Image 1: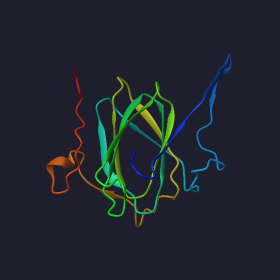
Image 2: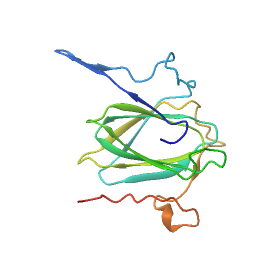
Image 3: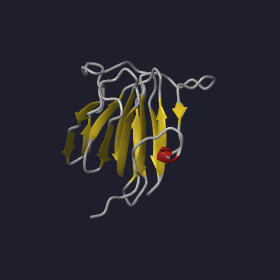
Image 4: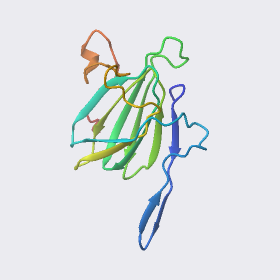
Length: 155
């Protein structure tokens, strides 16, 4: 796994009234602080990628639907520089994925319906000076090469 990436398996507690799932606690050993909480979505087949943050840790949980989340480590001082990781998060795999600063990331909705992602980043969004550095979703065809193909792998 890419250096600094954390995964927390989430426990869903169902009963006759509904269900409860704890996502992130300040006493989690990898908790990095609270910036804000926001929801983003993707429609089936849509790719939202690539970007990284210089200071911010992201904490992704897919509440409904399924997302293929890809990470690429381009940090010069990282022991895992050049490594790609892929995670399937959502209805069938409830996990929190923590993405450290400097790691490119993005996701693709792989469910037949809209997927909802809850993010609890360590920093609030700065509208005047965003901590966000972007590349096109298919960056393998640009000057910056990310060795990842968002296509489905049939077989």
